[in-house]
Image 1 (spheres, protein in one colour):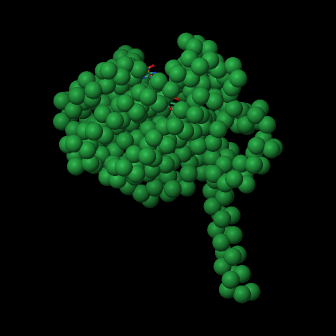
Image 2 (cartoon, rainbow, N blue to C red; image 1 turned 90 degrees about the horizontal axis):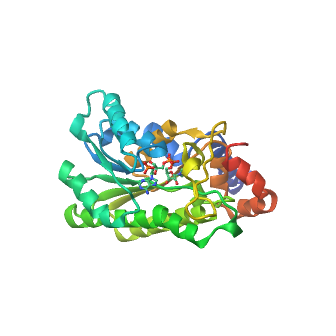
Image 3 (tube, protein in one colour; image 1 turned 135 degrees about the vertical axis):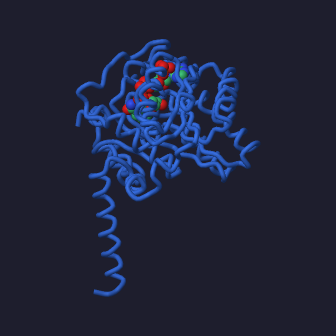
Length: 321
Ligand SMILES: NC(=O)c1ccc[n+]([C@@H]2O[C@H](COP(=O)([O-])OP(=O)(O)OC[C@H]3O[C@@H](n4cnc5c(N)ncnc54)[C@H](OP(=O)(O)O)[C@@H]3O)[C@@H](O)[C@H]2O)c1
C-alpha cells in the first residue's frame, strides 16, 4: 500500500470515528470534549451572569448550574413568584458560595423594549458589573406553513429576534464603552435554526436570523465572546406557550412521555459552553445530534429531503423516534 493510500485510509477511519460520535454523544464533539477536559464551570465563580427566561425550562436549568458553581446571577422573566422560588433554590444549591445579594430577581417583559435600558441599569447598579448576558427567553411554534398568519410572524420575531437584538445591543454598547470591548453574550438558539424542521417555519427562520445576527457581531467586535447554543428537543413546558398559526393563540400541548433531554442536563452543557466560550454548540438525544451534524453536508441534506418525509422528521423532533 502506498503512503498516499495509507493516508487516505487513515482519513476515512478518522471520519468514521467522528461520525460514530454523532451517534453516541448527546452534544457536538467540541462541547463534549470541553465539558470533560476544558475549563470547568466553576472558573466563572464571582462573575455576574444575567439569564432571561429564567423562570422555567432551560433558563432555570442553566441558572441552577451556575449558582451551584458560585456564579452571581440576575434572573429575569415575567412570572416573579417562579423567580423568587428559583432564587431560594439557587442559594441552597450554592452551598454557601452565594449570599442573598448575589442573586438578583429582576422581573421583566422582554417585549417592552423601552424598558430594557432601565433593567440593564438595575443589574449594573446592583452588581457594579455584568460579565455574561444569556438571551434565553423565547417561544416555539407549531403550525402548518401555509396557514401561518403574518401577525404571528411579527409576534414571534418580536420576542425571539427583536427583543434579543435590542437587549444584546445595550449590553454590547456597555462592553465597548466601559470594558475595553471585552464581554460575553450568549443566546439560546435551536437546532431548528441550523436545519429546518416541519411545522415551525417562523420559529426556524427566527432562530436562523439570530444565529446570523450574532455571527455578524463576532466579525465586528472580536473581543466580545459570542456563544450560540442550539438545543434540540428538551423536556420543558415550552409547548404550552408555543405560537400556532393564529395570532394570540397558544398551542397548550405537553411534552410528557416524549424522548427529550432533561433541562438539568441541558443546563450543564449550556454552562460548559459558556465557561469555555464556545461559539456554536448543540445538544440533543440521538438521532437529533446525528441529523444536526449530517445536515451540514449537502449530500446528507439531499438524502433527508428525498427520503425523510415531514411526518418522520416531526416524530424525530417530538422525541417519538
Ligand atoms: N425546549 C426545547 O425543546 C427547546 C429547543 C430549542 C430551543 N429552545 C429555546 O429555549 C429557550 C427557552 O425555552 P424553554 O424550552 O425553556 O421553554 P419555557 O420553559 O417555556 O421557557 C421560556 C422562558 O421564556 C420566558 N418568556 C417568555 N416570554 C417572555 C416575555 N415576553 N418576556 C420575558 N420572558 C419571557 C418565560 O418566562 P415567563 O413566562 O415567566 O415570562 C420562560 O422563562 C427559548 O428561546 C426556546 O426557543 C427550546
